[in-house]
Amino acid sequence: MSGRKNAAGRTSPWLLILISVGCFFATYNFLTMHGRGRDGPRKFLGGGDRGSYGSGSDPAKRFHVALTATDALYSQWQSRIMHYWYKEMRGRPGSDMGGFTRILHSGKPDGLMDEIPTMVVDPLPEGKDKGYIVLNRPWAFVQWLQKAKIDEDYILMAEPDHVFVKPLPNLAHGDEPAAFPFFYIKPTENEKILRKFFPEEKGPVSKIDPIGNSPVIIKKAQLEKIAPTWMNVSLKMKEDQETDKAFGWVLEMYAYAVASALHGVHHSLRKDFMIQPPWDLKTDNTFIIHYTYGCDYTMKGQLTYGKIGEWRFDKRSYLQSPPPRNLSLPPPGVPESVVTLVKMVNEATANIPGWEDDR
Image (tube, rainbow, N blue to C red; front, side):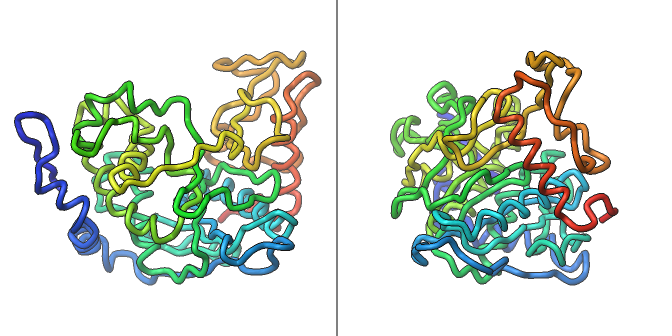
């Protein structure tokens, strides 16, 4: 876990052994020792939602939707919308969606346990994430994969701010997972830093895919091997000041990409996996809307990104309370992707019981 480096700046032989062979057991025992017995009972619902499947869906291709989340209200309302659209799309033709689990890494149950199939797992030991909450994600997956009963052979790693705009098929091809390429994940431009975690004997840094862990559809057996390494690399990157400063909020994404490459796993890069408004304008060739960026416009439909618009939809506007039902639609001239996003949010909130109740 401490990860010492030699004078050449490469990862030490002991760390390589830890990552490639023994990291799971060492780290699992260490973190579990610090995380057990603090918050009472745990609720494990690893199988998740069942219900109908898409017509013609091949059971061998079905994937389990795994959503990592916290108990913060901000995460809760996004998770409710995401789960609503999962249920809407799961049974439609072309879908390979299987069960669903919200992996709640807050360490204790919350008010959505009866609404969304949930497994509660421990967060990292106090102070270990250094305020970087997503550092808990790899550790959450390690626990879930160990403790849950997962019927499907594949897993989709997803996030609360994902909305399914149409049924999602299994985009993976056998042992080649499918992932979305992020323009800001640039392994070859960060070779000096990445060599601390991806030694030269592993090959060129171009073997590291320009991806994060989400969205990714991957074989469960592959993720079981990658997840402990992903966790260890994430922690080591956070502990390294140069790496932490260079990667910032995408550090955990780089860690997944590195961990996959360490295990020799290459992803098929699917730009049609998702879109990110306001930069992507249409939804006709995608499966997921990722609403991570704010959408700000004038009443004439002109984008004012970085400046609060006369009309706006930004998830960060709803940190303390969920968005109200029946949000105003964008003015004329706003891209179809933004219009569709707001309509889908409105449809979900109109149909989720007790939407504005405290949870």
